[in-house]
Length: 269
Ligand SMILES: [Zn+2]
Image (cartoon, rainbow, N blue to C red; front, side, top):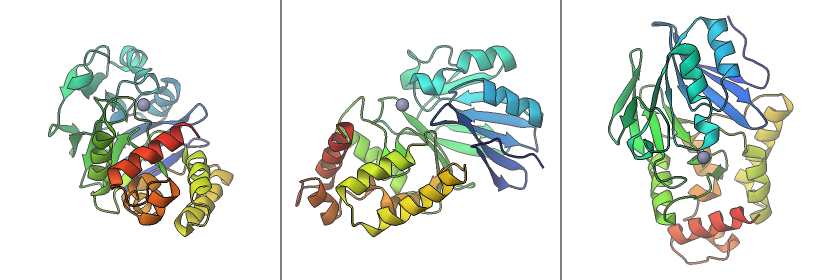
């Protein structure tokens, strides 16, 4: 049995498939799926090559592809290095083909990618960026959501309208509650500090803070989170609650406007 690297975690998804969260820098994870049946590996986003190559060397898996959720540098930065080192393919959104160098496979809504026998559906979830995609496995109750949702937070809206990002988040929120959301940033404590500043008496936020502090004190990631947990404590998914609307000065306004106000508040926090 391999042990997880310090600050990282291993999630056994089936008897022959596991997800490694490899810490990179202060708050990134490289998300590496390892399939023991085929000895193939799939990396979701590539913040840095070192930890990924070290893990592959240790476990003896062959990197088949990097799947990029979007074009930001902390998600594609190691694409070229990993391709040079392993010969892996580069997969990403067709909409981002002009800004993810060297894509071998351009993905669109409804496409399917495979790791061994495990299929992932590609969803287009614009908002954080216009070309953002997710990879969703109903079989594994697992969704790689990139920077669209975080534990108690969401990605900054760089491209597009608030209603677009809201719709993408609502789509993720409609996945079965047990679905694990594998996002790539350890922002949980900072997100909760902001949320508790807005709603200091909210019990779900208080409970989430206890959970996050315990995990961080033990050197464990707070991720992946789940859809059910985010529905309980993520203010961006709770924009329809009157108390959340009131906390951000939007009492009586539609959820999408509350969401936009929350995002604006967080951007200036
Ligand atoms: Zn990003």
